[in-house]
Image (tube, rainbow, N blue to C red; front, side, top):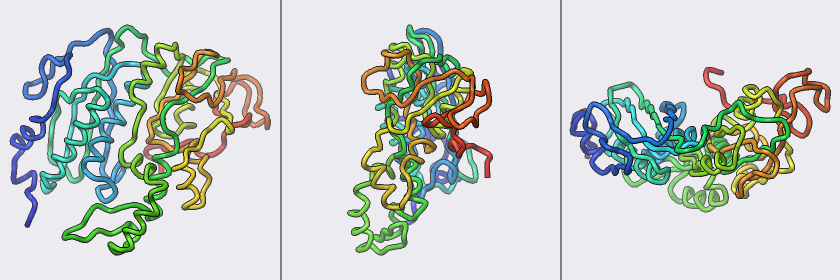
Length: 356
């Protein structure tokens, strides 16, 4: 039986069915259905936007619609958390082929609704249009609510560098998927195959094998930002903060450049989680590469005055003056950069758009 498509349902009946189950938070005076949403805020508003483009940020043969919906919320709310603000509302822009099954759109929205509840935000409106591939734009708004926003340019010499959340999981999951290790969505009929093209019996054996590092694949499909920890860091007086979207070194590089400092990481301070270590063993690679340069986990990393790092955060380095050479003499005078064990990092820092 052929699945019903968005074209067959029509735009407005589709929208009505997608927004009907949504619940609104207490600060939402007016949600979906009018020309604009009305929201009461406490303090200044903090706004951020992110795009998720099919085959760039997600693949339908790697992730379910529910996964993509969760990811769309998580990656955006993490930016508000990184400002030390309280996330409030989300607005969605959704471009899709008219041939997309309605079921996919509904499962996508269910994933968004689930993650929105976890993150404490309300989906208050959006827009839909026709496009060749699925393109998702999410704008998230938050409030400062009595705390100053934590920016990237406030790191001070002598600060401790600490993170909370996951590092290396999503990057490990991506590498596993790229190596053909993971699950396709069920195809037509009753057959399901692994990424290696295995039959159902072989796939069941594979499913048992993947259990040690399943969390890494799931983190690639839908990350788990440390919701609420941005406010914890702000209350603790964090001087600078960012979420790890592109890679720890790449994102800390923004803090170093904006603050005019050097960040010196200590490799022995990192705790490599068992799923990440198991994934590294599976494809014979160094897990520290994922920890240092892998993105998409959306952990929070911040700098704090000594002795003020909140409970649950892991100290991984310090902030040094951007003056004098590094231990190997490779970093010039006055040059903000990221150091690892006293030497300037020379490898790739993480993901960059528009690169080959």
